[in-house]
Image (tube, rainbow, N blue to C red; front, side, top):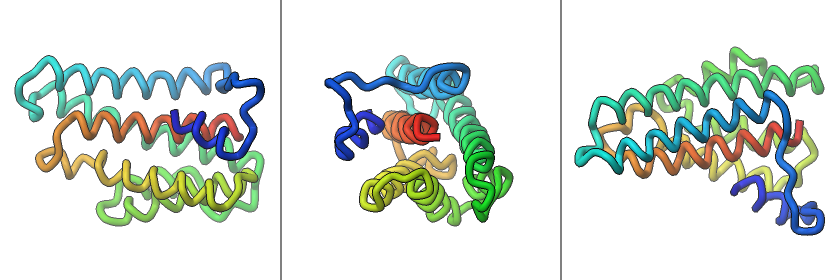
Length: 167
């Protein structure tokens, strides 16, 4: 969804058909969407949002998103060796409490800007990704419903899919 919105905003949607990235890289993103869908389903099937399946899936989703950040930064570093941060810094930045808010925003907007996306679109994607990161961070499990977290993970994986399509 985010990928389609960003491509339409940049005027790159050809003939109304958006082509997703193909191959094993897109399977990684699809696996993230499946995990987010499982989190969504666990909330719908349970009366309590703090059920064991929901907590476990939430943690798995966040760790998987951290893996995707690591992987995408590694792929980007192959194209742009002058990038000032590496895969380990990117993955660790998503895990440190409080700094993850800035890091997820910075990571998404910086990589998109380095890949040639217009600055306003890159900043918009960074802001949206940063807000989704705040909702999805495991520290907020008891504060927010699992439905909000599942929606945040859909946004995070959609942004990761868009970044992957640009690499």
